[in-house]
Length: 222
Image (cartoon, rainbow, N blue to C red):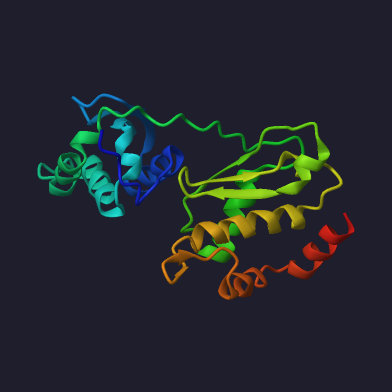
């Protein structure tokens, strides 16, 4: 069976927030596997209830914008949506990717609040990645190895739950989140066809974090 070309990867939360901003309404988005009704909209007062086939998680931004316009204005012609469905018709029988469990509220730190603050301050609010605490792991050596990660496939940042402690300063958690947001923002940086991970430009932008030196120093001491 033909595989979906994953050039884009939106998250349900990001789409829901985008549609909310574009329509100025309360939006409830449900992802479905219904290939008969790929997009359906129901309104009640100032609320909009949207049922959208999961394949649109991988649609280009132009298609997503057209969906927002369709929701807002109920325009009859949707050429980009129709073309996207035609181009990916052979993929519709694929199973929906397993949904990611998002957990932003920790015992001491709320990742969503920290992410939004960093996104607005350093990235103009343009980053749409989801963020979540990782699963608890009782083995310290394993837990300490990776403090954060970014998955381009699911467009999700995971922060190691070992950081959700009272004695971990907020500026250090912010630094880890900022580092992973940079990976999301610089995903397409390549050299000779190969993706660059920690390039010179990445490290240069990493140093723009306000508490960079203090965060590096704290990490070395722990």
